[in-house]
Image 1 (cartoon, rainbow, N blue to C red):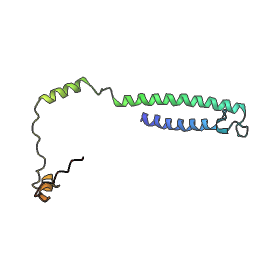
Image 2 (cartoon, rainbow, N blue to C red):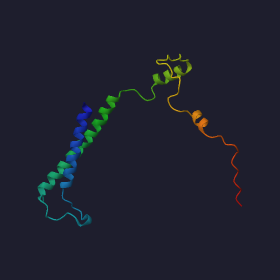
Image 3 (cartoon, rainbow, N blue to C red):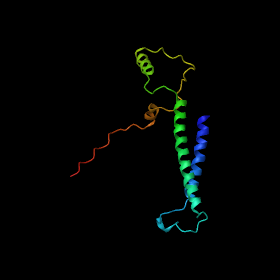
Length: 137
């Protein structure tokens, strides 16, 4: 539940951060675009507002990402891949012989799919081996 809420918040923050970054006026002359006073947000106050909004959304993005990681680790549990009990159980389990499994259903008398033996039986028998290729000179 917490992961879902954090994931939705992360998506909303990402979309808002992208929009705020794209709304900002370009100050560099990259490819001759932007930089002119033709935009609808040319006031200095709007630039400061967008800069502050960008930094707040960036901090929220990183906090949400770290929170999502922590929530994911809590949901996973505290067991390690190499757990001492699990390794011990594997070592003990390999030494003991397992009892034969009971058959739940009788085995079919005829195989369901053709086997390799059926394939070999259906091929024509080769009467003579193929001649060896001549050596290259």
